[in-house]
Amino acid sequence: MVKKEYTVYKLKNEDDIVYIGITNDFLRRINEHVDSGKEFTSFDFFRELYTLKDAEDKESLEITCYQNTHRGEAPKYNI
Image (cartoon, rainbow, N blue to C red; front, side, top):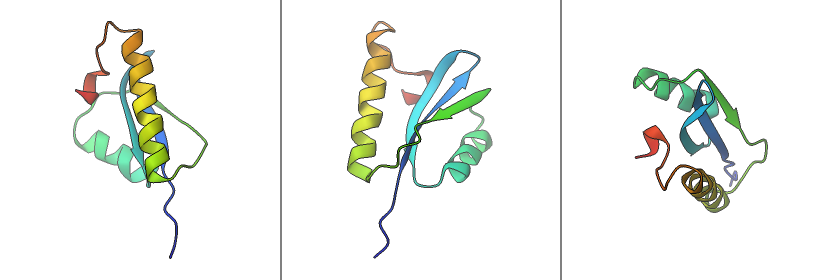
């Protein structure tokens, strides 16, 4: 069985993080965001590859860190 690997990524609009997510197919997921009308100007991703559980934990940690610096609010598209 092939082990799936996941990437944690952030969409940004200028310097603002607007989404934090995980995917096992980065290019497909970026295209889905474009097709759904999400507005973003760039993206960052963590070079580490994760198991699904580890990716979910990392995504949750990144969202919590964001909330800690934004009065408890999640990124725009993570609501």
